[in-house]
Image 1: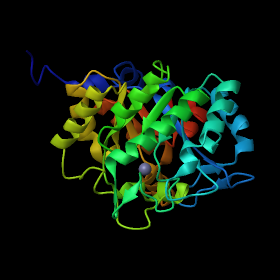
Image 2: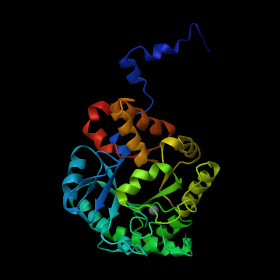
Image 3: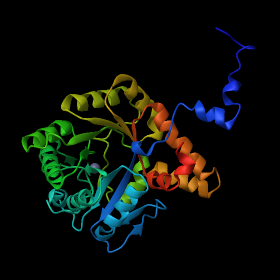
Image 4: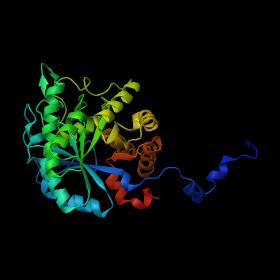
Length: 327
Ligand SMILES: [Zn+2]
């Protein structure tokens, strides 16, 4: 073992070319997932105020959008729907002809993109909670039956990956059971396993009109002071049959990503959420940092922590500017 003065690590950073060949982490479009909001109320796209550059799209714009995504090298998308009508039971979520179900069918018909669909009820219920409310709280086991109905309609529409995000106990098992029972044993489940009750979801609620009308989501989403519990959540989802597990949000939770990577062999996703996007956009507008540099550093940090897949609102921007981001 040599040490200073014969050991000099600055040799490893002497030029850009040397730094490039010694890079341990890379940004790869195969590993980035682009979220899409499809709004059944729109005739044409609307920018989400709190997420500059991100839009809610109308159904008739969807095909052009996803074809463009495919052309610029994006491989997978994660769908979120905004229905025309919301009710107590979130019935549009499991309408076989609902906005997400129609979108899945269209995208699968027109492209080879891997189509993932978020499975939850908060965009579809009038109270904005992620399940069926009874006595002022979300009834876990009753909600599971509704998640099964949603999963079945997604599967029938041709989805590749069902992504339950409601943090109900037993949701992965319930969904695996219905998928297998209905003959969809080749459809994957990407579980939002360690999803924290985070303030970083603010702009998303704006995007999907999904803020809860009473209370909060702290009885189902995780307490951000806990990390061991996150590991238990992930273990639980693996036992229930998850194919991909996820940590959400990403940047404030890289310790969880790293620990999950160390402990589990499943593909691991991290969701870099709406406020992570908005903070970086706004910080760059204030000239606190350069946008391209901060995107690169932040995405790289999530991969470096051990994520295999990163869900990022910057995916489209990265694909359009691949010479900057992709080595
Ligand atoms: Zn939800």
